[in-house]
Length: 89
Image (cartoon, rainbow, N blue to C red):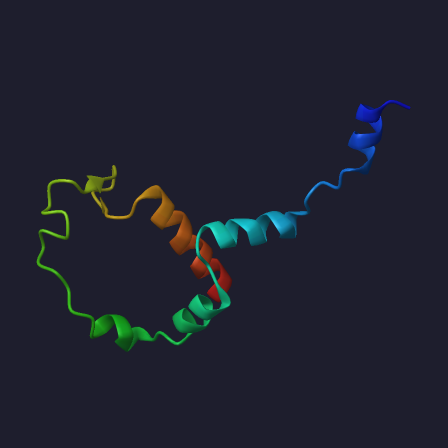
């Protein structure tokens, strides 16, 4: 038996749960964040002060999709938000 076959046979591949936990760490999803989001209610968002219709970027930098919905989140922010929402449900 050579070293390369021994090494391949003895290295443990990460499980799906290990990969998911690593992704959560990279995206900043912590137990404290999940608890905070769970405490949100409809009134949390209803009472939140909004910027004017121009948005944070001045209105010119926001992307739109084919359904004419403005996309204000970066890809990273969108992945982070989707992961948080999936953990809170």
